[in-house]
Image (cartoon, rainbow, N blue to C red):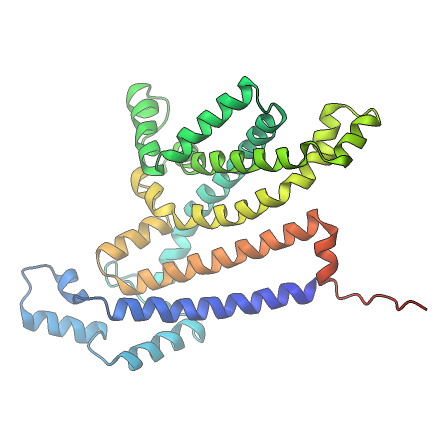
Length: 317
């Protein structure tokens, strides 16, 4: 298993390196001059040229690419934000906590509620409980996150006055962003888990467990759930990456100063150092999330773990 983890980490390094090359190339060949965006429409051509020379965007592609790769992977220096004038690494460090709090809290809610609803619907297949649960999940899957976030602000902040609509003054400010970020994932996981439960509901080992006199709760928790979790784990790995990568929308709606909002402001201002650093952060996070997903496979299914233990089978005599 250790060799497998090392192999995946090396693959992550390659992915991040390729991502850095792609995002730099895309930004370099994007039409428009960043200096003009930063200076505003009233800037003269001479001022734009001076600004471009100061930022280094007037140099050849290979020169800029080499400097970017050297600074990023050898010096671990993401540069200084053109808009804020602050080192990007420092700003990322200050903002990272907010994004991770929302992301991991959303995933916990996503996992717990989605799996519970899926098991509930699957064990009541064909009944009204199943129909109501699937109808709710269909509505949630169809609604965009930003629309759900806006509706929650209108209801719980403007109408009822229960929760803050924006900011990070208290811990209650995170409640609406977490829920808004998790609802779509809850619905998708519930539907996936229901399908997995139905696949194992009539399996022979489930019938044997019932025949041994085990209660329905024991059958579900000890036999159905572990065997139905594999597809759900697959979905969870991708969902974790999507929650973090999609944080720009939620952070923008609720004015949360996280990495997502930082990248969104960088895109609007053509702040290339900020965009590159944020994209690399999301690439690293997505790769690590998939590694955790693969390790969860091995934990739940010993057959998968056996493929990576490296143990040698004894030869038959």
